[in-house]
Image (tube, rainbow, N blue to C red):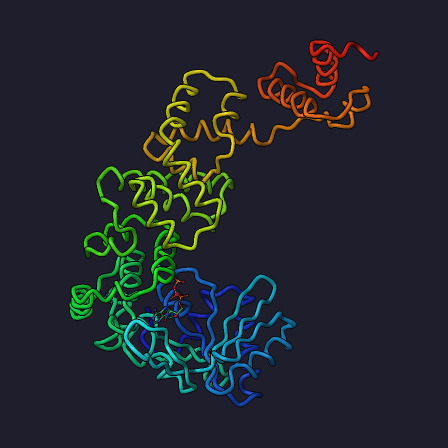
Length: 436
Ligand code: ATP
């Protein structure tokens, strides 16, 4: 890290040309509008750490909404404004830019959502979670690249420390304890001694129990979306706060190694581009719920705002997981493609991964490859082809198509011509006679 507070050279070195150019434009617009504009938070933290992060959060000292409108016009970007919070979001190409009016927050009572009022940059940064997230870089051209560090966040970054900004931070917002754990594990940092004490104190005062399930769920998702969530999950158990996520979950070495297996599998899938990382959390979550008894599952389903298919997956894994896992084992010893298709009918890749988390990775990859190929297989015969042969539409169509698909999957039929030939044969077998 550099010693002085001018970071313009660092910005030039580490940012893509497009972003650097964007920042210069923002600086110029800010000068014209006579407001001060800063890029803040995770972006600055990661810039100093040399970690890629292109989530741009701007804070405006002045009217943030007026500025975001001006910026959107200049960039021809899409703009969404939240008048009530003094914030706006721009989407420019595929780049998201969040703009906020510098603000101060009041908590009406501990663990409540904050009330907002316009204020200056220092107060805006002071309401944040940790010193390492309370850094800002000014973008106005005369001061372009100037680091604003009111709370010695840069020193803490250099020393690898997570430090709260004030003593009651965890009492005001206990989810910050979980955020602290996440950042600690992500960067290999430690909570600074006093911060650690505050965390233990807030935990022993049962502050986390005051947080809504929705917010707890958001925090859990953020952990499960980390590159490797397992260390943070272990740390959560060390702090004794698992019960606030899934009360009936028994942490064990077995569970830990299943989660680690999911990490390995997902990593391999990402390399194959078979995997959308936005849904990474789902497989981990399904591994966790797989270890719950029915009562625990009931609690999870009641508490958390899960999509229907995920709810269904949780129940299916609990009720049928064991049988399906055994069938997959058997299939690996020499099954037909159509049998695998049948076994995994209705399963998602996410649920499949959580089911296979107890097994060796290599076999699972083998299964996945076979399954992916099956999913891509389709037959060329359509209902119209059957109709053209004079068969009255009805359930028989589905039956015929299904038989053809099975044969195609198992390789006894290998081309469109062979499908047509087989179609005629099947119709004769079914007693429809030849229409040739
Ligand atoms: P990540 O790299 O995980 O996205 P981030 O620091 O960008 O990390 P966000 O969750 O996007 O995190 O939050 C943006 C900023 O808002 C943070 O840098 C932090 O300063 C602030 N923030 C987020 N959550 C809280 C909170 N619970 N209390 C105080 N400040 C918070």
